[in-house]
Image (cartoon, rainbow, N blue to C red):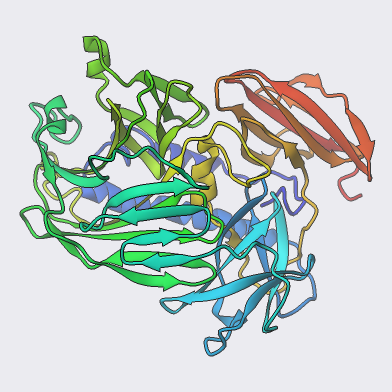
Amino acid sequence: MRVISANYTPLNMRENWERYLFALFHDATPGSSIHSVYKELNAELTLLAERQFQSAFDEWPRQSEENTVTIVNPLAWKRHGIVEIPEELYSKDNSGQYLCATSEEAFYPIQVVCGRAYSCIKMQGLTATPFITNHSKRPKLSLPRNSMTATPTSLGNGIVHAEFDPYGQVKTISIRGKPLLISKHDTASFTLHRDHPEAFDAWDMDHHIVWMKQDAISSPVSLQVIANGPVLAMLQSMPISIGENGSTLVIQYSLHSQQHCLSVKCIVDWKECHKALRFQIPTSYCGDVARFGGPFNFVDRAQTPSRQKEEAQWEVPASRWASILDGSLTDGLSIVTESKYGFRAKQGILSLTLLRSPTVPDPKADQGSHTIEFAIARHQNMFCNTADNVPTAAMADELFTPFVVLPSQSCKAVTVPPITFATLGSVVPSWVLPSYSTTSFCVRLHETAGAASNIAFSVRSNACVQTINFNEKVLSVLERASRRDGENYYEMEVSAYKIVTLRILFDSINE
């Protein structure tokens, strides 16, 4: 947010980074399985994030315009997404309301769901756009009005169509008319597994739990239509009894009007002992490997085990996505998660572990209420500018990084981004932050498909673009490809798997 507002002075984050890194030690948040550790460190991490946001907001430039709200897209690419509208900007008694981007005269419908108002908007990367509400009955809409449908057995938005079986579980999904190859002989399902490892109760999972399973949902489930409007279509179950100790599961499926994947939310009241809750999708994708995401890359693992080595890799830790692929490695089914999980992809079945219930060292470590969100999508290697969808490696950021609504009606708009990407291919921008050594900002990119890819971008004309290493040592200075409309245009090739950091310096940051 500092970069978007043209404040290139880095935040003093030493203390925050030290506390954050401390929380990442094995015996802290990731691996302690001790409830008191979660309670203490999760609260501290939440507070650190809130402080950083408040610091960015306090420094945001102000303007005199009233009755507007400024919405920020913190990601570096153009995207669609859902934004919750502040209560003071809409009337609960008026259904014909639109969110209007004042700088573009763009109109987006507003839909009220469970007492909260939402809109699906489109924003350029790294911009802050002012919005107002508009009560015009027939404005020219800025997004295509897709056909939103919701019945107890199906959801659709004109891009994605999903159908559900009598047990409330995913039966078929098609995206832009092309079906995902979910098995015709089985459906996606939640499963319960006996989970009592030989050693290290909280930290081990024995291979045999994969086979010692039962369906978590054994009786028919009625999905109820919660929303069906121009912005959101949503189905939700009543609490479903699972397990033997009174645990319950609520399943919610949703689509917004421009979404290219099916969102799934699980609300679990978990009371089990030595059980694991998993989600699996049987498919007909029979490539040699499955792909598991990492913070800056991925790892491929054999889908069909032929040796003990492959069989021993029966579950793989992944950061926010995993895909089961066909032989071309360009098509397949992906599960995209809000956080990191353990995934399994063998013989056409993609699954992940949602919850466990060890009793040592803490008998109640994972007990209680959990909200777990993920999405089911088609695997994609490249940004597609014509379809406005993103590669799987960027999808978690797009789904789970919300637009930021600045909590003041006097925040200044920033409609010209500091950098604009025209072409990204299979390269994902992951970090945008002020430089720690000069008055400038840095953009970290990484190639995510295992093949060289060309990118093209523009910055304003008084800028110098460098490539640097992690210590901000200059590696090269880029030559501009062209100059027009007061901006310099650059092109470069990013090698397979390469991490590249660009630094953009300005002759005068006040120009």
